[in-house]
Amino acid sequence: MRNNLKRNQVDFFAAHNWRDRLAAMKLCALLVIALPALAQVLPFNEAGVTMGHHHLMVPDVAAQKKIWIDVLGGQLSGNPGLEFVKFPGTFLILSQGNTSQGSGGSALDHITFTLKDFNGTKAKLTAAGVKIVSEGKDVMMTEFPAGIRVEFLAEPVQAAPVMHLGMHFYATDIEAERAWWVKAFGAQTNKDGETFIPGAILALKKTEAPTVKTQGRAIDHTGVGVKNVNDYCQKLNGLGITCERAGATIAMVYSPAGVRVEINQGLETR
Image (cartoon, rainbow, N blue to C red; front, side, top):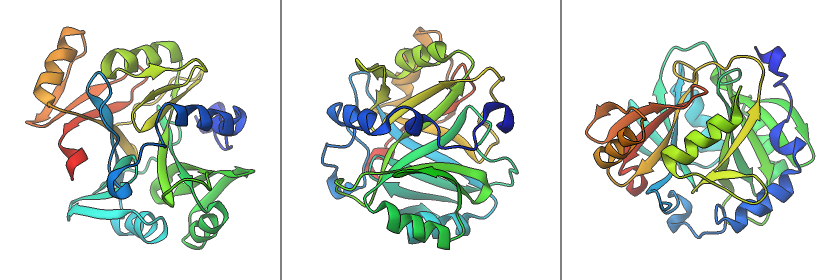
């Protein structure tokens, strides 16, 4: 699958003039809004949605924490068994899971962050055993333990050392995938064709090969925050999108490409 999709390369942002795209997204207030304590998600959009989290299922939670916290400076919260690492714009949830499949080759191929000190952070990541898959000027694709693909871009003027930028989807029908995010979560597309929700660019790339669902992979699912899960699921049901309830404040939905998305309430206040 990987060879077919030619994913061992710095792809979306490197191939699409990422500096211009990043500047355009700043105009859409993804990175210029001052986040309280630089560790919370952005305000809800008109649909009542904001970027929530990425849920990582990994065999060695301690190894992940060492990188995300000790190297990248994420803030730890939560409880053993369900630990949160906070970055401006998103949360990472770390859970123990014995999956042997990384994110590469799934519908959510990788997640992207920006770095204030690109070269310094690159050196720290390398020293911590993170694999540099490929790199260009001020952009690199890395692979963390458990095969989690993370792209990093240089952004020396940002306020925080590390900030969330977005996630990169592969789909056989990118317009259907984009339309689903617009319908389900009020995603917007600017004049440059960039699709986003508060806190995340939704980068979409077409593939001819069938995509693989994210469930059971190292990035098992991504998540969005809403004000009230029950109310939001009723809204989605009215739009023909089925919510699978996983508790009073959690539900799951699936995009056409197979991205598993958790709908959560209250995470933004943690």
